[in-house]
Length: 212
Image (cartoon, rainbow, N blue to C red; front, top):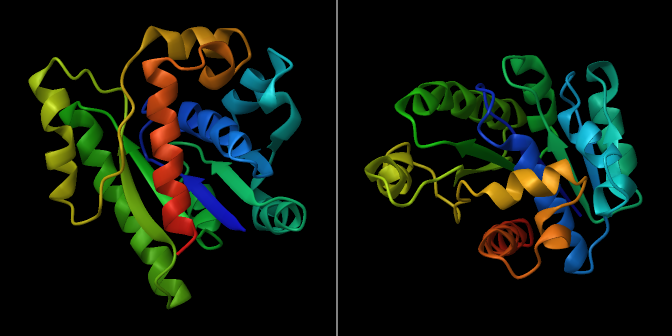
């Protein structure tokens, strides 16, 4: 059983997209999943309500006062708990990090995405220090990458300079937005697409970490 928190101080870096599509990829691996939407905007829950796919079965809203209780309760019945946290509300992310096995920090290719990443990393390190543990493990996820640009090609190396490992990245692809509009994950909407394969590779990398 594992708790995976997707966090970041900046909005628009793909947290909800990554959380939802990881849920589908873990389900495809045969694991039971709960995806907790801790963002007051509830983008993940809105996405789930658009269709009748995987997310409609596993997404739940989680409110700040009982977030940790929501996580612990979900762990009683599923293999993987994914927590989508809000930007700009560090206390919610911090509470989730205190019960996380792994924190994923997505980052886009813009230099403006890198600045708030330092704050998110600091928050995760603070949670680890409070727990006096090696957990949560921390990994960066290149997100919304345009590989035909210098910024896109250089993003992974830029992230490595922060001192944490970088997982397989997710490209900026229109099919991802189309899947969301349909209320489905990319695996359901466009199985076998490049986008779906990217999420699958990310899920496998995450699974390998939490099984250690």
